[in-house]
Image 1 (tube, helix red, strand yellow):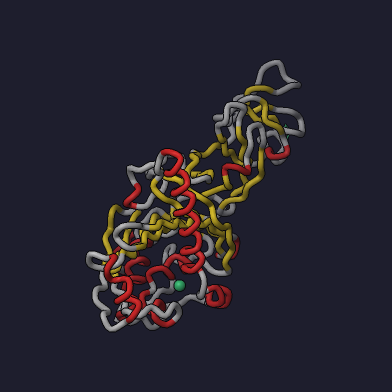
Image 2 (cartoon, rainbow, N blue to C red):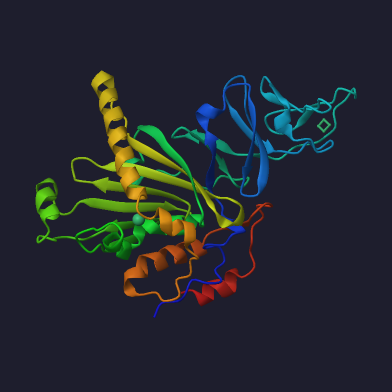
Length: 347
Ligand code: FES
Ligand SMILES: [Fe+2]
């Protein structure tokens, strides 16, 4: 019998998360010279786009008297607090205090940010340790993307994520005609993939119909980055669809997610038309993928009390996230307690 899933360091934990890139807001929602208040993983931030187009994310509260800096205004590359007009540069340094001749040596915390797939992402630490998540087949490609949906779910991001590798439910909920068997591969300590290895299923009319398009089997694989961002790759050999689910935890362990359709960018006029068409089909595929489990996510109290062999991919996912860098909701401080005992308890 495999172990149960209670009392984990980070899996399904409502006040802890894994260090990584988390999306803040769609790029198009932050024009030049604008500042927005964003709350991420228990931390309030002021996020602004400078005159030259760079994005800066800084802790929200002014070191003078605590005004929210998103009430202020962007001036060139800097942000000026609304309240007493202290000014902070893009690295968070206080560069001007109107009532003093000289400024004070103050610095607001800023966080690494990058833009990708139409989203602004923030790294929840000072030192960036990973690239922005990508689908393995698209690592070296330029991509066309489309944010097809921003959604909220009542349960924890980890629980939403494992749905894609819950082999058993493909038959029971989504009526797949064949049994799905996943093979996992740990790419690095933050990234794990699960690929379907199912062959055959000749007795099903559906499989017979689509068989000519496959060399061996249709691709269905899921690539997880730090248990929070997952990209599905699926389709016949000649055309793969890629759908990224970028999740982040809300208060009380709920989920907010962005669903991003992506495809390799093809050039030229017809390429652009084809990209649009593929993205449109990908959205439909994604909708189908996300449909069917909605009701479950509203009421589930996840506790895998009785794991069976069909749940083994889920157990591997849990084990993989448990060994990553864990941060505390709100403070974003690293949680180190329990690592040793945890590692020895979880072979
Ligand atoms: S609170 Fe920001 S300048 Fe006073
Ligand atoms: Fe599902």
